[in-house]
Image 1 (spheres, rainbow, N blue to C red):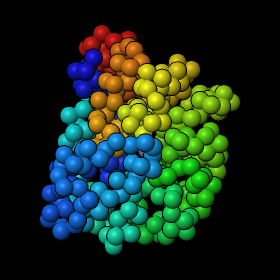
Image 2: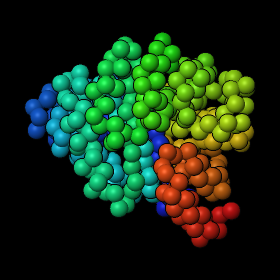
Image 3: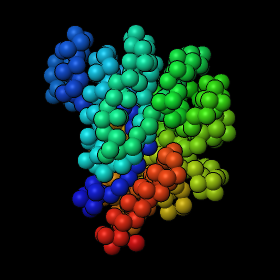
Length: 335
Ligand code: ADE
Ligand code: ZN
């Protein structure tokens, strides 16, 4: 199954680039930029990756991101991710970034995007990519609006808007103004919802923000009417099994609702969220879910198809990716 999964053409739709910062690169950049880390060694960092919940992860994740300063740092971060994604069969990636994590440290959004664009161009023959700007929901709504305005000169490089960070107590409604600006500018809209907070956050992400995909959406299952809507409107969920396991969103991967929702007809996808922190890139997420939930090759193929269909690529590229997937499945006698 593992080789089948690695070769399977797929799209990754829920990936925080700051969450791909491996401890080795963290230490290299900390030394170069003379940033002090609260860890003595790479082993120390890995040992600190024991999380009780989303917040305990975010506290460490924002500390790690402090080593990213120059355009070349952001380019290196993106290059390392793209190399790993390509090795995992990712043919298209829609990549989240958190400009506020960097602007709060005095790093300009132009530096961040400039670095990403260099790496994206370098790997463009092997993987198509786009950027999704995420607002940090633990910060005030006016900060999201300011961030959008700071990003305005770079909108040609940005595909969409997202919403991440501490979910409970920071409902989607707070960000209605920033999302309206994005919609007016022609951006695509997604939002994290139903990771730790309940189905009401998913409803609000859809109805108040106008999100076209829901990132995580695990808790949507608590509301049968919401599940019916996700099925009826084919609203994709970008699920992240290893993240959910590591952040104790689901106590045991064998209880993850990904397969139940797939069986119900929800457009479920599998993604890696913050792979450097949760112990696996996207192929590992597919493989762990397949093992824990007993997914067949047909089901795994369906999830890869969902990922391509749920992406925001243009019709021509989408058709190309679907053809590639069909050929791969046919050559592996998967129907
Ligand atoms: N930022 C990075 N990963 C996240 C997650 N899983 N949920 C919310 N915010 C995040
Ligand atoms: Zn996420």
